[in-house]
Image 1: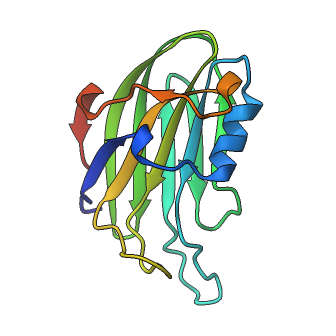
Image 2 (image 1 turned 45 degrees about the horizontal axis):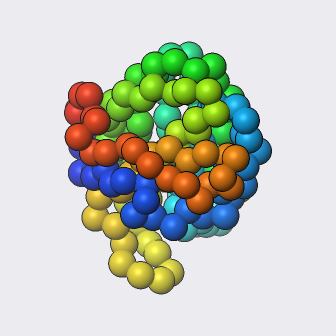
Image 3 (image 1 turned 45 degrees about the vertical axis):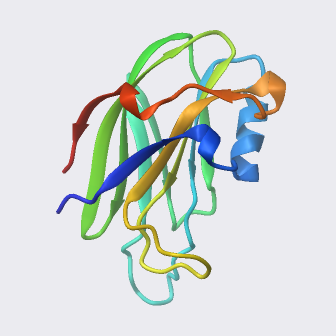
Length: 160
């Protein structure tokens, strides 16, 4: 698959979708990871199976979303500690992949939201790259307190 461009932004530059905020609240008091995606739904009537897929994996974790399922956020409770995460956004015929290192403390919730390249959007411009928004939110503050994740924290960059 050819490489697609990607960019990484701080989480504070994005208004979190309500479903992501809800997943963060459900992790109240626990360390964990929330993966979200901002996508337009694909029509399965067209016979096209070129759905957009977004995934986060590493250290025995695998969270994934696609435009063919109805969920726009998934979460996992994790023990505190260091994690090296591979983040991928794929749509036929291209994909992008990069690795990101985090350190979870007790009660920390790491949030990764992707706005992938899409075939079409109803409102607004179609993104030219897979845009990732990364950072920490604390469930006990109802996802209003955000800090951290900075693009300079990317530990290795590669494309498929």
